[in-house]
Length: 476
Image 1: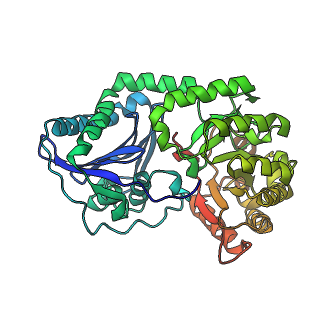
Image 2 (image 1 turned 90 degrees about the vertical axis):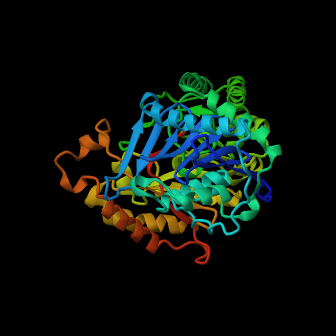
Image 3 (image 1 turned 90 degrees about the horizontal axis):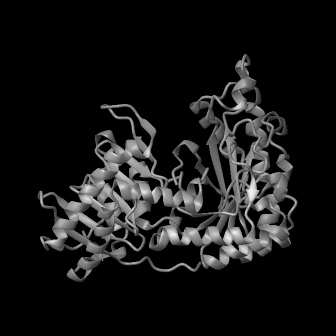
């Protein structure tokens, strides 16, 4: 889509009934409430909370009601990364809603003063390597994520004044404007929608989401705010020893009429909150692996119902390499911008040991066809699997495979550490073989450095972006 100047968002400053200072940013896709330069809450246009900073850390809420709680290690406590059920997360969500109720009371009683945006907002945080396409998210969400992850925190991971101002000013004084009394009605409408989303309403909303969408297994980090259109369900292979994401989801594709009903249900569910979703991800694990004559009409339906939204998807290399560049151009014309491929490794021996079909050569050929069609690639490299037995060959041959792909600045290289799971076949296979045990985080970091040091991009001045892909932090 053509780029445009950022929308100018109304900014209101006021005092809550308990006299704490508050700021409300009315973005084009979200509302962000900051209280006392310490608590920051973000809701979409339907009033659903999706990013909350409390005294105990930061919380990301998924549409199914579950939360991811994160807190960095400090002198007062260890690092926390924990998934919470909807019931476990209710106190956090309700606390943020109570803050919104106080803001609503303050604005409704007109106990407000409007102040100018600070004339010297801080410079924007440097890009977060774990979210290389942060422009896919609204600017205030980008600022929230970047500032938090970059360490602008109080004890227990609570951000202070610099984070709040970044969320509000978005690093660009032109992106906000002083709130006026004409903005009050909009603020009150949004806060009423937020306050109406109590525990019962959010429980019903989560059920509505699952009825419209079904569960979303995984996405690349730069697509966490995509609209997921499940053209297929499950994974067509579903037998890799290191992955259990779709073990209980039989692979199937949707009939054209079934897909249309699915898309209509998604549009009805999201309503105005679709503004937060800046792209469409074609799910699940291998949607682009369908035969061309079956797949193309389905993608045409998605593109027609969400015009102007760029498309992204996963694909396995051994299926994708069968498609010609001419066929890929059909999808590029429909808006396909990037395809994410689980390379895992450039070492054929390790790939076979992981029981993943295909070869690194398949992945190289696939990327060549994608590039010829004007489509970028997102290559996913698995770290830690295969242990020391495969580590040296894994690093050397993965760098060789990535170099052969002639990657450029629109491409991504994701590094994903193997996450052990007692239910995986991997664990049973390494029993009694210490040299196959998953590698430590520090060893994985060293392999990542080796691969990047040996990688030769198509243009050394314009290399691909590298980022971390931690499946434990996925929330949709």
